[in-house]
Figure 1 (cartoon, helix red, strand yellow):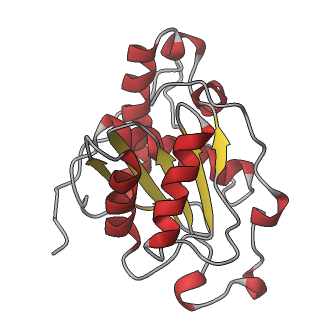
Figure 2: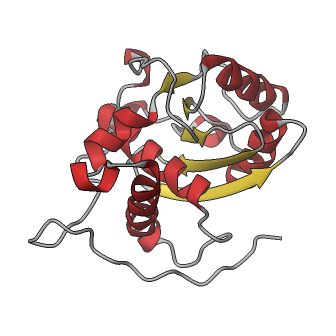
Figure 3: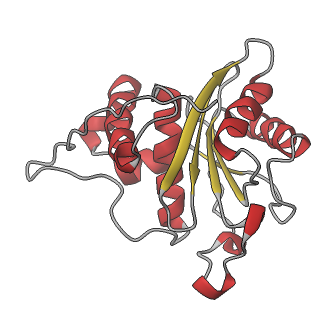
Length: 206
């Protein structure tokens, strides 16, 4: 997705939950990160410890919000997101996507609305200056970082597209901002280059 959304700070009410405060069931803290686009979107789902649980991408040439709903449904199943963070071309797309998620019952009642951030926010935090010198290089670096984030998954639900990869990076950055995770998002060699992680086998969930 293109940069251009006005930066919006993540709300304090999404701060890291304590162990005693973690609810059970469908409203256990879950962060849904959405890489918005008018037709093609990517989403990534994170748990309360800031670990990537799943990712998906979808395309709908007529309705990008519907694509968000389709991708999010594959990640969430019967669960509901408690925090939604979007990156894209403007707040209108984020609000339309959130409305679709709400219509499908994929967001918890306490989730008041989407947090909208610019691509430059998470890219500045996760990528080196040479990796974000232009959009092509930034997207390539995002794919490498996302493969690291998805490296702990035994299998991938689908191919890790660029849109899903950027959603994964956005989600990891958001979890760090919310203090849901402590470790660095990206692992690097001593020379600063991103570490390479092999792709995992794809096992589609029926």
